[in-house]
Image (tube, rainbow, N blue to C red):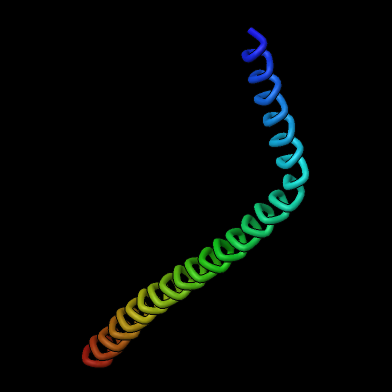
Length: 89
């Protein structure tokens, strides 16, 4: 039984020393985790900015094409109307 108590004491001491080491390392690990989170957030922000910029370019291009098509159709109608009315006079 004395051996079990001695073994338990060794195990208890190992646990205590491992806990102390972990507590000492915790601030450095927390700093590493936070710096990684910051890097990932910056990367994500850059990617989101690029996606938003691309979407805005696509929307602007599409809007320009639609406006150009409408202007062409309206100007064609006006041109046709003026030819029709000048032919009747």
